[in-house]
Amino acid sequence: MGTTKTEGFESRITEMADILKALGHPARLAIMEYLAKSPSCICNDIVGELPLAQPTISRHLSELKRVGLIKGSIEGKNICYCIDEQTWMRVKGALAEISEMLTVNKNCC
Image (cartoon, rainbow, N blue to C red; front, side):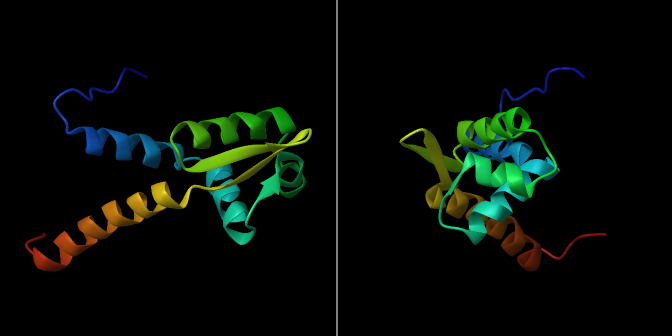
């Protein structure tokens, strides 16, 4: 697949596209759902919940962390992850803006 052209778009648009792209994998959505149910967790807890190997889950956690959807802290030998609520609020806000535009501009086919 070729490189996606991002030049010419506002930075807020390209940043949100990157975040939404990260959410576009079932494992990452499942991780986000799991983290939403619990205030924090250890990576091994997630491994017990998903049908994936620990290295695969670690890669998905790394991608979610890269885009700012989750944050992690080291506690002894373990890393605890939780949803970064500030980023999640930005996602909700961006989707709410589009939803609002749809209700105001009902010129759709």
